[in-house]
Amino acid sequence: MKDRRVNVALAWGAHRLAFVISNQVSGNGSVRFEGLLGTNIMRFSIMILQVLAYLKKNWKTSLILLSITPKKQAGYMADSSPIRVRIYAHKEDGRILRASVVGTEGVDKRIDILAAHIRLGGSVTDLTNIEVAYSPPYSSPKSVLNMLGYKAIEKMNEYR
Image (cartoon, rainbow, N blue to C red; front, top):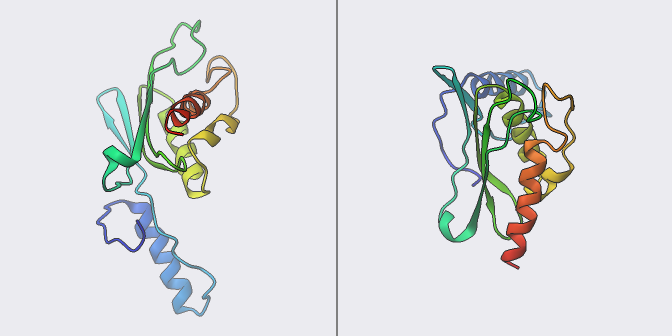
C-alpha cells in the first residue's frame, strides 16, 4: 500500500526522515525516503514480542497464514526453548505482508532478517535460501525462517 498515511511513533522513521530532509535542503537530491515497514520490538516480562505489521485489505481471501513453533536452537541444547513465527503472505506471489516473532531469545535476529528480506523484495518461498550463522547454541541446521519457506512452498502449491 503505497502513499498511505500512517502514524508510526518509532525513532527509526523520524531519524531517517531527518536525514532525508537535511540532504534535500542541502541540495543532495539523491537521498530519498523509500517508506517504512514499522518494524518494532517490545518486551513483556521475560517474553520478547516483535511485530512487523503491514496491513492488507481483504486479507482473508488474498493471504495465506504460516505459523510454526520450533525450538530456537538445536533441540538437544539444555536451554532450548520455543520460538513462534507467524507470517501472512500474498497467495499469488508470496509477498510477505505481516510477520511476528515471539520467544525468549533470538527474536530480534529473526525479525531483522525478515524486515531486510521484505525491503529487498524477497518472497515467503525465498526464505528457503536465507543463510544464517549456525552453531547449536544459536540456531538449528534448518533455521526457523528456512522451515517457514518450506512450509510456504507446500501451502502455495495448494492454491495453484
